[in-house]
Image (cartoon, rainbow, N blue to C red; front, side, top):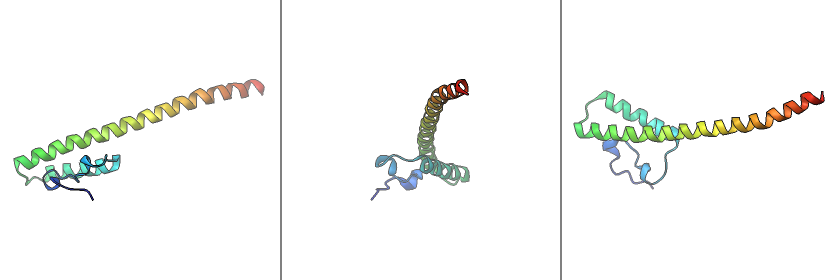
Length: 94
């Protein structure tokens, strides 16, 4: 079971110390952090903790998106390299 120490103050789940967050999980938690900050009603200390958690979550999301972009670019580059040769060969034969 995941320990949620500090979850109330930062709005986090505590999972950042026990398991890496997936993109959707980090994004959803970030949306909740932003909602709580925009709603107000938190102390300065709570707001700072929320802000810091939001920055961490934004980094997680950014890393996931950069990784996804790299995978897509690599896949597209591989497809271009393989597909281009096959198409030229087919055109030359026809």
